[in-house]
Image (cartoon, rainbow over all chains, first blue to last red; front, side):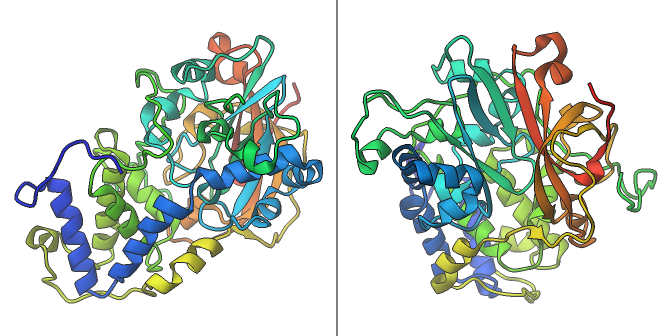
Length: 201
Length: 235
C-alpha cells in the first residue's frame, strides 16, 4: 500500500478521522463486524487480483478447447478456475485479433471484473479515462505508451450494466512450448483491460 | 422512457442530475497509468472500501441505489473515488436513519441504532464475495430484438437514475448480443423493484457517435435494457 505522506497519531487528516469515526459508530450500532473489514481488505490485497485473470488468459492461450469455452460462456469457464462472484457474476471474454483491439471502460462509474482483476486502478475510475476511452482510445493508448499496428481497429466495451468484460490479448510470439505458468507471467493487468499489451518473452 | 412518476416538474424535487456521465466529455486531461500493485493512495482508503462493502451487505440498499447516491453528490467532480464512496455511504445511511451527521463529528454513537437485515461476519466474507449478486432473471416475455437488428436509442433527458449514457442517446446502433433478462437498474435504483428487462449489447460506429472526430474503424458498445431501445430504420 502506498502512502503519499506519513501520518502520526496527532496529525490525522480529515478523512482518516471520518473513516475512523464511521468504523467506531457502525460497530457500536451493531451494523458491522470489525473482523469482517480486515477480511475484506486482506482478500483484495492478497487473494483477488489480476493474477487470477492472468491464469485465465494463459489457459486460453495454451488450451484451444478452454479458449472456445471461454469465448462461448466466460462465466462458466472462469468459474471452473475458481473465480466467481462479486462484480463478475456475468462475464464476457473479448479476444484481440490482428484486426481488432478491445478496450473496456465504465463511463458511468467504475464497473470492473473484480474476481479476475481485483480492485480497479485509480485511473480506471477517473475522469480522464472514463471520458476519453469511448471517443479517443488511440490517444488513451498513447498515454500508456502503446501504439497499435496500422490496420488494427479499436472496439470499446462500455460496461453499462452488470456484464463484466475481460480482454483476451494475443499470445506473444516466441512462446511455443511454454507452460501455462510461464505464459501467465507475460499477462499484465492493463493487457486484460485493453490499455496495454502482454509483456514480451 | 419508463412508466414511472416524473418528478421533474415538481418543485419539491429538483431535476435528477447525474454528475457521473462522463463518456465523450472534453477537458479532463491525460490518463495517469499506475503499477499493478498500487491499490490505495491514502491510509484510510482500504477501510473505506471495506466499510462500503460491509454495509452493502446490510440489505438496506441495493447497488443501483448506491450508484444513484454517488452520481448525484453535488461535489462528485471534485472528489476522489474513495471519497465519493464514503460520502455516498454516509448519505445512504443517513437517509435510512442508520446514522446521523453529529455521530461522525462526535466519533461515537449518539442515537439508537436502526435496523439492518444482516451483518456480514468475518467468517462469511469469502462465501459472500464468491456468490455475488447475479442480476439475470427468468424472462417473462420474448425478447423484442434479435442479433443484427438496427435500433435507435432513447433520446433526451431521463428524470431518474439510468444506465443509458448521454453520448449514445438518440444514436443508431446494432444489436450484437442478447444478454438475457436482467434486473432493470432504472427501477431498482428508485426502490420500484427489479422489473427485469431484456438486456442487449448494442454496438455503434464511431462516426455515428462522434462524426468526423471519430478514429477510423472505431466501434463502441454499451449494454442497454430494452426500454432504452426503439426500432431503428436499417442503415
